[in-house]
Amino acid sequence: MILLEKHTSKFLTPQKIFILSFAVVILLGAFLLWLPISTAGRHISFIDALFTSASAVCVTGLTVLDIGKDLSLTGQIVTLCLFQIGGLGIITFSVVFFGLMGWGISLREREVVQSVFLPIPRRDIFSLVKWIFKVTFFLEILGTFLLFLRFSQDFPIFLAFYYALYHAVSAFNNCGFSLFSNSLMDYSGDVIVNLTVVLLIISGGLGFVVMYEIWSWMRGFRRKLSVHSKVVLLTTGCLVFLGGISFYIFEMNNTLKDTPVTTKILVSLFQSVTPRTCGFNTVDIGGLTNGAILLIVMLMFIGASPGSTGGGIKTTSFAILVLMVWNRLRGMDLVNVFNRTIPGEILTRTIAIIFASALSVIIVTSVLLLSSGIVDAPSPESRKLFVEYFFETVSAFGTVGLSMGITPKLSNVQKITIIFMMFAGRVGPLTLAFSWHKPKRGIMYAEENIMVG
Image (cartoon, rainbow, N blue to C red; front, side):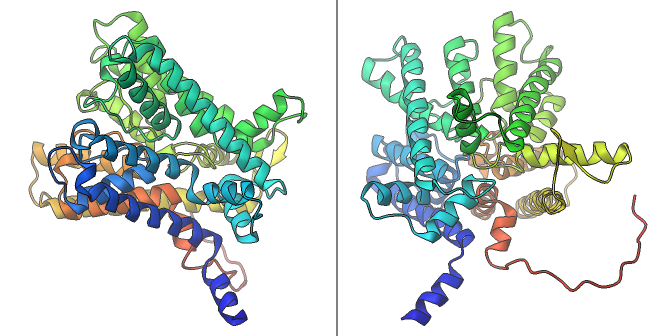
């Protein structure tokens, strides 16, 4: 018995538990969505149910279905539960449940929560997780109330409340599932809807440890924010501001032409926020200029922040990469920020994450192209498909959910490929790799230089 426990403990590392928990929920969700009770009028294939479940649990938002039309009320509630669980993680739910029942938290659960949410270990894991649940439900309830004020003007009161709840939870968890066929395009100039959804997306994408530090600092429990939180806040602010301005410049003579000033500002702000892991849109993505498409691809690849409900390489990785390049140009070997030096191990891990992520995007895009049969057919149509497949792949990796309209046209092989990309984007390429092959320290030989650059 003892040997069995040791073997199980050795096999089920925190990374494997984290990954397996997502896989189990995805399969369970696929089975529930596949049932006739979850569909409205027509039966869906299991691969479509699996795709929808994976997209919901991985809080991506890509879908081969029209959630508001193809799924029944039961199916829609299933997706709502899936992206709520996917955003917070099944392990987080179990920690709170066991804590409330007085059963205590195991060392393994503590390790999993720390690996997901925390940059450094903490002792008060249960208190932190309980706070995460409180702030999550508070923001979702607040978002539901604000959206209800607007939706109640267009729909019956109960339907308006349901729409508000669904979209608020979807926004905070950075999922992007919408019950409207055209997402939020009908509300592109609405101040309440835009600002509410934007604030929910940013809150969910900051990372729970950052929100916890901000809350503690405002209450006087902390004297100052950590370097991690400062980097996240500064990077997020720069991406939102510069992204909004860039989108306006690219689209001022296209989608923003002949629109009121308020709409121009709201659309530019919304499209600078939503590509960073939430698939809502207030304009037709397929009708954007090449510059705007490139901008959105870059924002999707960067994604949200560590320990959040989003994906991508994360804002901290992008910030560290920029700092590395900047310090190298200044002739400095070390990377300093806010009077602190970033450890070399973090720098190496950052480079590995970005390289692994870029390689994953290239491989998956290649698979989509090969399975489509357009590789040997150079034409304007094939060029268009290449852009659409590349955009779809980056969107899946960043768990964003934005699409140029190619998602419903994917073949079964392509759907499985995108499912894998969504899964890898949610758990992280390195986490997925290290879960099966634990990194080992190699042999140190004599050093010898190699010319680079």
